[in-house]
Image (cartoon, rainbow, N blue to C red; front, side, top):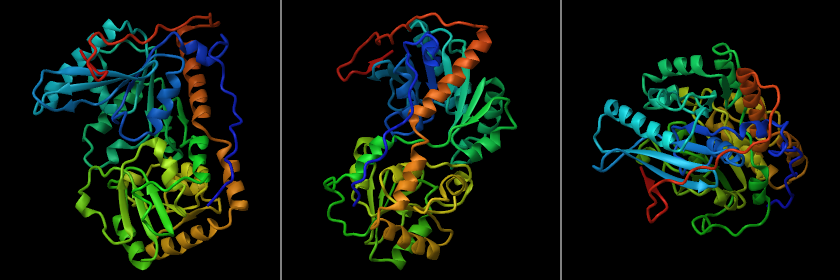
Length: 424
């Protein structure tokens, strides 16, 4: 196992107290984020960015509706941190989606009116949110952060392509979660910026220290090759099965929730271990006790544009990895000795064996990976996004100077329940 420390970040974050800084300029605005992902599902790009924006401005994270029970439509609101409020529309089970949309419009419009939110930064993760966004407060800036090609995912609505075209017409800025997505969107908008996967190197760097094995992993023999992430149609199940068959002495560990696919369709073998979803804070403890990592992605429409965040996270944890030939992985990381690329099960076995050999000699490959990791961080990504948003605000408002001011705090929900959640 490794003991080397990951390099400290070398990027200085602008001060919110400096009236010349972009961050200070945004303090007069709230941010409304419209997401297809649940806040508590998997800690990834939206959570990394929104927690950072909430350091200097009120952030409201609006999830897709939850259809359950028979209570009238309502909003469940709770704060997960200072300035960061999660809003979940709840609709009665069985309510047709066409009827849920106007209810959602009404509830959100009323909420933001009572919260006193005006001229927000409106941030879209899903084009589907356009269906109810027209009653939200008029946006000072509209952002489309395209982290995935959602229309290519299993079960995607046929309306997504039409809605995305409308969102691209409306957006002031488009961010993309990788270079492949950037190339797909850059001809469709005048202001597109690529922000590939970043990393919290200090968090995953903890895995380079010795951690006790988590109880559900402790009995699994070595060598271990691990994966963490959402387990869905992007997983090459046949590949995992064949690697496990060819190398029965290797233990394949998959950490993450199973969604959109039948769990019974997953390959089963004595050396394949599904440990379920884990908290973000606990991931370093699992990775610390792996010998190498893997990204056995299928090559299909759902993976055509992906830029897996786990690539730099594995490297920050000090783990060499083997991946199928995902375009953004090959172009962004394939030059590193620690990132092995394999297209077939036989190649995957060979490259995984090489990755395992690297884990026994943490020398030049680890230093080369660290030099790459020094260039990327969520702090750097957030700061650069903030600069672009502030520049757009200045152009739209004609502002030439920034006067010191402070944003109004996030208002507490009017009705507080015992568990800290409010219904409005």
